[in-house]
Length: 277
Image: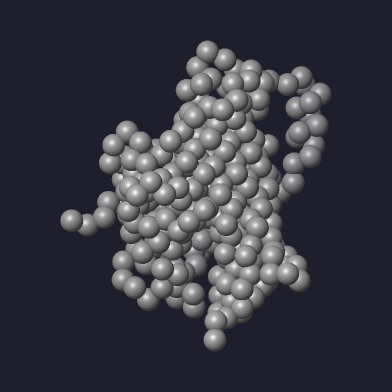
């Protein structure tokens, strides 16, 4: 049986299985960080919406994901809860566990009440808009990238999403600007939300802006996204730069855009290790 055209399939109410479309480029047995990030973004968003049925809707202002262990292509169970039931600020949390009971990921979302604002406020928002980076016409084929896995079959970075670089590429070092679009659903049979598109794109920041040559390790154990609005349309742009400290720690910081302007910002902390001998 072939994998469906989605990143995850739903096994039960709270159980999911990553498909080959979730695989990362480094280990064919493990997922790319963008895959579970998009999954839990949707789970938190849904929990927040369900808790807002009798109250003002909540805007997903901040999403923080701790990628605690590599997630394999194995069944996982999601546990979601609202941990702060505020009228103006609400917090939801989620944990993913494998069948051995090991927690592989935890995440939280801060929702802030969404309400119409006065006209003078709206004029201030409109006046602060800046034109986004231009969306190129042609995608980049990441199967030819030097870091790509030689294993057969689809992968998250090359098949689940499409990349169109304005500046830089996955094969060169330095800051990069990349438009990213999910090409398959996050969960089979379910629509993709704007927040899931942001989460999937933001996890590429450290790859788009890598500053170390091949052989170095610069993994991100976390991802934090802050948004003052959600994207419109399928494309999310990340304008990314990596900064390194002297103790083997760094950050990849990204400005987030859609075709109408700036959305917010994301940051990943980085663990840096030199090539093994």
